Image (tube, rainbow, N blue to C red):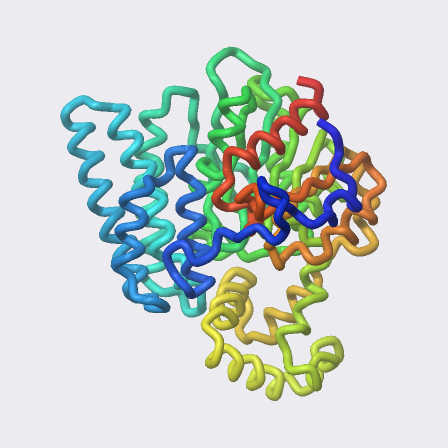
Length: 422
């Protein structure tokens, strides 16, 4: 597949009749951008069996704008209803129907807790994580391809995960799925795993520090040197007879679009990396969350009381800021907003992107504010590189190309097929 160069990616999108400024996939169910983005995230799992249109829209319409209590209650209620239907199907011997129901229930349980990422950990957040995991594992027991629950040794403890392979003996090219800030390993199955398995790849799904079970059950938090996580995963994979050790790739989405390429700067057994929503120096943007007259103080370590007061005042006025900072504090293990913003400054590829020595694909959504430094990222790479922009005109311009799962999978895995010579 031909590379889309940076100059191509900068070309304004046009829709089918040549008009610029195609509409975006916003305002589907909510005017609140946070709610609507998470709703679109649910819909994005439909091609992989993670949700269904009618039940998702009806549930969304029961939720008042901005009401996070109702968000939790309604999605949880849907999860319980779909779970009960799946159990009834299983009891009657209908394994396919049961598997499909358990998989959808897992999505609804997970999304019910998405706005509860903040310290101290809300018991409902813990419950949502447990319920989505349990529902997913019941689906996994009914999969029609090999599927294992695994634990990978990691710095004196273990990281829980899943390993799935296509039918057949292998060895298979393998994809490590790296999720985002508020994702779980169960979500990665319907946000890349199914698409990979359909194309003949084995898949490793795992919650790293700061994610899912590693956060909730093991109290592990995000670390900037993500190569420590991926190296543990690769060590485990290369010992497996089902894995072609020369063809291991990493696919990182959302926050994983920073973590996966960061790992590739030091873990050189990776044959390819895909960074979806590539974030070159996200930590450098931390100061932008502060009032302009306080931004220099983040680097100096001065006036932390004033800085925390300023951020908390902003959080009180902005639900979006409150969500982002609260989630960051929880997943980074930080006691204050400024502790989180300061920790975030360690997350950068500046000065080390040229250490990546495998082919890299950057995929960016036209309407995604997180990819503002994608061009800088592309320019810093010295390995073979491709950048693809997904446009609003294609219905694919949102964060992680949400709503265009089939198109993303087509382009990303076609590239991967070519690069690792399957």
